[in-house]
Image 1 (tube, rainbow, N blue to C red):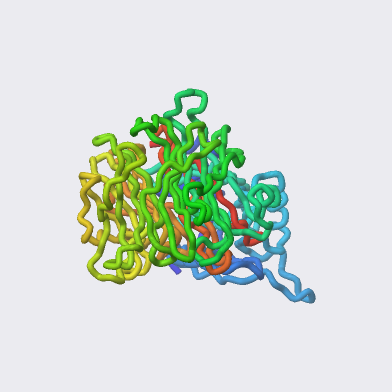
Image 2: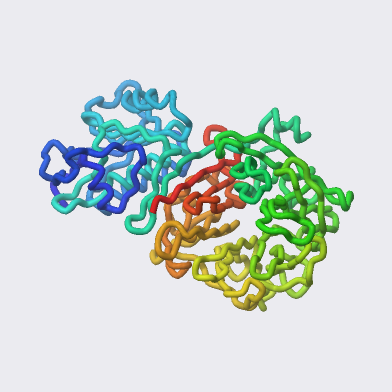
Amino acid sequence: MKNSHLFLKITVYLLVLSTILALAAGCKNDTNSEKDPSQNEEAFIDISNYAIVRRDKVDKIVVTKTANIKLAILDKLGADLPVQTDWYNPNTPPDPNAKEILVDQTNRKESQDALAKLEAKEDDAYIIEITENKIVILGKTQNSTLRAIEYFMQNYVFTSTKSNCLGAVEEKSLILDYTFGNILIAGKLDMDIDLVSTVFAVPNEHYSKILGYSSHIVKSSYPSVIELKYQPNEKDNGKLLANFHIGETPAVPNAPNSESCIMESTDGGKNWKIIARPEETIDKTLTGVTMAHLFELPAQVGVLPAGTIILSGNSVNWTGKSIVAIWCSFDCGYTWEEFSILAEGGATRYGVWEPFMWYEPSDGYLYCFYSDDSDPKYDQKLVYKRSNDGKNWWKEVNVCAFSNFEDRPGMLSLTKMGNGEYFITYEYYGGDDGYIYYKTTKDVRNWDAADKGTKIATAEGHTIGSAPWCVWTPAGGECGTLFVTGRWEENGDGTNRVFVSFDYGKTWETIENPLPFDESNDVGDYGAYGRSPCLIVGKDPSIIYYVNTTDVPETGRQRVQFAKLKINN
């Protein structure tokens, strides 16, 4: 133990900022914030004799995160606090005067009182409350409890200049609505989470009837989102469209039909409604539209005017055929025409999958990148085709095609950075077990296909894997901010964090995932949660829109969630 007395400090907003920590945007400033809080004896609470108490029956991720509180306090303060559950023998009830850090919705009165304060709040709300002998950390749901724990560790656990202590914001009772939370990396990133909403939750009886599925269908995946920017009717610009795959497992032969659903929001992402279901019309032997990517054309290509909404996706006959095709909408997503087929392959492990669209202004071509299983020389490779009219597509060009047959890159996404380089991410199976790699080029047409790229990792060894997505924005600093999402993080704390770079991918840091999920609640044997998160830059480059497939902790069911992020620096 570093000190004989360890303290929880009730300090001020300024101190939290100075210690590279995240704050809620709604916290009020102290008029005396220029003073040294360590001089105020009333600002300290001795925690030497505290125990950490969690709810007895919780998911393993809460157990892990509770243990992380213990480890954080031990690491920062040298205090080895015991961890206990809230179970007790009715004949020997717990001492109400015991000093405890209460995690999650325990059976202690203080936890129940704090939970009552969240009753009228949204599900993303959480509370951190300090009473005479209790520190309460809980959320209205399991996910918001996890955020409360994360917030507590980021904002309360640090070493001050004059004593080892726990730091806090000024209020002893702090209720935070995570939809107005803040992510801060001092000197690098200051980002608010302005909004979190549910695009679609399954099972959903209303949508099950519309979609023609029974209500037990619980799988959705491959979400994408766009903000309309190039519509001829200015009133349509600013609308949000989201797409996701829904249905049974799309990679299992003889599975029920799978298809894409187009959702619309006209109020900035607060509310969503289903407006369309694109269908396979060219080849009736194929089913569904899956693994699809939404894209708005910024300039005319052939007969396709600027503002055309393009959905690139797969249709499949699992007994032998798959295609990559594009569907076009000329009325903001309400009706769709299957415009062209650009690639064909076999089924299951011999097909063509997961297209990603790109318009290149330097040559006026529309590019479609996709995963290709059909070449017998490779287990899988990444390729593109391009077109100057949307109908006719030039021959396939390799982007990642590795000499070892078992190496299997997949699920490409692409962004262009402020230094003029094109940056791609992809998952790398075979040679590396699903870790996310990247590589760059100065010419989107030319890639060193044999180059296996570089694994994304922080200096501490944190890595990210599976179902990647990348986006770069000029906001956030001299070199802008590069974001990469994936399904899982290794050497982390059990969460699926987002990776960020402020130097065009040379170095990486991690931030809390605005739309996290508990993979232990995932549906069946198909990893639907986090497959595949999507980030885009809004018309305002300081705005980032984000969609992900997550879980409803109380039921283990699935939902597609949306977040609006605002970069302040």
